[in-house]
Length: 510
Ligand code: FAD
Ligand code: SF4
Image 1: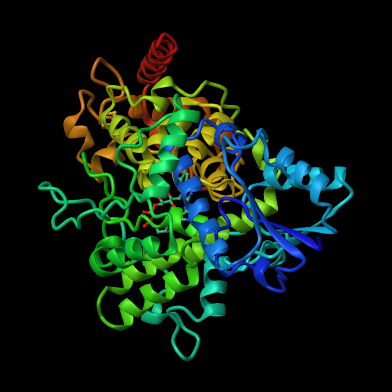
Image 2 (image 1 turned 90 degrees about the vertical axis):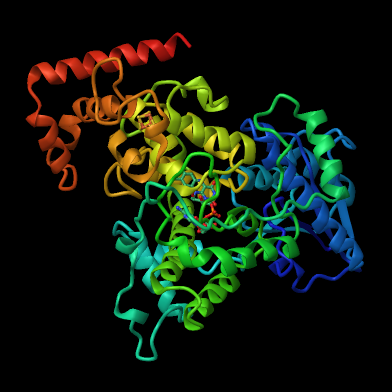
């Protein structure tokens, strides 16, 4: 055999660089379903189902095209890790080289490299053409400076000529319409909500669901409501639903939340992008066309494109720039265990109950729920950031480490001390009250920091500032919050500390 070409579960790209110069006479494709990829973090059943079903559909496409493929199916082989499965193939097939598109996970890359090295086979890493920039370009661009998303986004807008005028200016005169994109719903709630995408569960997915129930019965989440696209055609249908019915309202309500409404005006395409069922440039160009055709306002279209061309490319660049150091960073020395209710949703705090509840039901929560509810609470509580990272990697259908880890350890937990976010994303319960109706259905009062009805977010917000006062004094963007803390009397501050201690103690007993 000349080369063995590995395809991982998040590399289901029909245009992958692996297919260039692939010769079916002397090369072979290789895919494997192994236990470890679902158990190294305690993966949600829908996440496992999505990956396995999409892999099996992809394998069926390859076979239909007559391409030679070794597919190791869960339950039909005895290897628990990718490295063990690969080692066995290397021993028996003796390829001259192993080819692999850069994986989405540093751990996987290391394990596969080691397996090849142990068998004296060269592992050749190919550029992932799915992305619009490469880690090397990002590294050169970032240099020694602290890279900020906004400037990488502008680079890529210019490079791909997205929302640009002929003379090289941003369409509309501004690069960023974020300030127009922070609306809450009126008191009556969201109007004209589009219905969610139709679930499609074919025979392949049904078989995978049975496998997941058999092999991973105690994993979090339920499979009753599985609805995620597992083929490019299904992913395209979800994208078209978004472009036709949701995009015009995307920006305005991007940060808003509402009880019983898990999807609101979001696109639901992250899992399809991350498994490479959708191509990001196609998605961006289709969204841009909706603006030029006057079907969606500029603020909504720019806001959506910024998420994909800006944030998605930026976090990937940062991931490869910062790994492996990022794994273990814990600047705020946060050491509490993740509260048990993150795995059950059983808590009196409505905002957390709703956000975690829909996560367990659908494997999905939107960005502000991840950042300003579950992420915010974990940070204010002083949760060990590696435990928070493992939770996010486990419970979301779109979770792949290159995108999950920077968002969790960097943006949400400030574990990296400012590599990604210039300051901690912290707020009291008042923010959640402003952006949702959760507090109206909660036994706590968002404005109260002490007493029986005190909102735990508000108590812990002040307690966080109190705990980290010295660390952040002099931080240019934390001055306002610290001044507000310093306006409180010493009695008030002591009462907040006492309330927080009682809250921590109560959590420990649960
Ligand atoms: P929309 O809100 O419709 O946004 C459109 C697209 O933009 C998304 O599909 C996604 O591809 C991209 N996008 C938006 N925000 C980001 C971002 N911050 N970083 C990278 N891409 C972004 N996203 C993941 O894809 N996988 C993860 O594992 C993941 N973990 C996260 C963990 C935390 C703590 C936080 C705060 C955010 C995380 N995100 C992650 C980013 C974001 O929350 C999700 O991409 C988004 O909620 C997915 O839903 P959607 O497809 O409906 O996105
Ligand atoms: Fe969450 Fe506090 Fe509002 Fe309750 S009052 S929903 S705990 S922010």
